[in-house]
Length: 271
Image 1 (tube, rainbow, N blue to C red):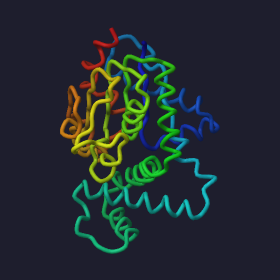
Image 2 (tube, rainbow, N blue to C red):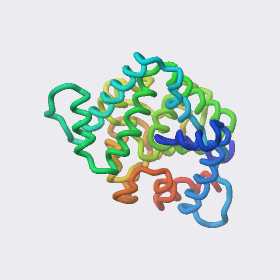
Image 3 (cartoon, rainbow, N blue to C red):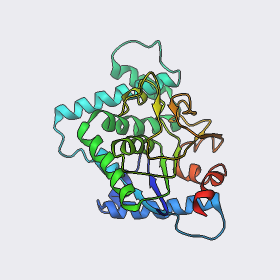
């Protein structure tokens, strides 16, 4: 086992497009960036930290073969995700009326940074959680990368933490000494948590059996990481860090990978 496998979050389809619709090209570009970001946290000699980034965004965004009816259904599911996410933020609990009107009202009410995040978050989370075929392909893509690299460490950001959690459960042969979740929505009620596979039992999920240690890091202002602490929802979270990254840039992989809180958790496994 060697190196680190990364699993990206929302809004990474542009890597695929810029690489000429090449998954290896998208992965390489992202891996080079993630190595630079992590160097900011670890310091010392510049080196490649990541063996590979598990890339799956193209599986949630291709959409070219969808007819009008599936497109309309996906739009409705994204609106439902957005409404559920907003309720977790304490917005719109008492709003009534058509779902489309409610979600439009919510987007108008949000500030620019939150609205931009919601427009990425809702469609991709909806595509993953509600389309069985896409969900399985994403899980398999992540599982294949972990199996191929046999890493000591898996670092999963944002929606990638959900895909990774399910992939590790679906493939009991997969192992990691350390799983790090960054800005994770795994505990988000009525949006993600209740829809996980395997489903939580008595209101609690569990650490995947092949993971020996689980560390969760969330920014205090991250509107994807609701709740920021996962130990209240999952058995087997060994350590949690609530950090203050940036009140504007609150969810990016760059900020999370470069934060000082990450280094002490990684160094024992990189020695």
